[in-house]
Image (cartoon, rainbow, N blue to C red; front, side, top):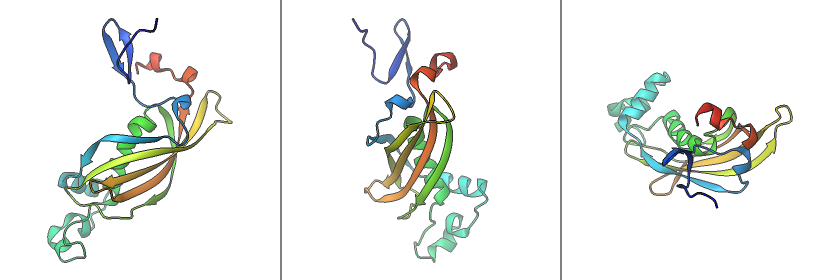
Length: 176
């Protein structure tokens, strides 16, 4: 008889469970859409810190008096902030067990993001194949979109990453 335990967790001891992060290669289903939750509200601190950290000190992002006179009437959140938040939301489940991020393509920012906007993300697994050069591993592809609370798409991108097959995962050895 199969022992019951909470979905999304693996039993590691008597009445003790460890959260499972990400997917192994076999678990990624082409065409599946994963909704990433919780959402994340963008703060002024997010925008200012990332703008300064990335040396993008354009007044459009960090100078409210300057931005007030521009087309948006307020500071526009840096695209690096939007990308970081949405990609981070997606990474936990799509590539939480990834061995390497392989690339980003077709990054698009079709609508602005402002401080106070809440972002949500979803990813569609668009393809996968076994690695030709790395036995026991596969390459997965996904398309991620970020939406604001109104459902308007504010970001989209495609990404590929290297992920282990279940038998080559090493989850027990690494503690995850």
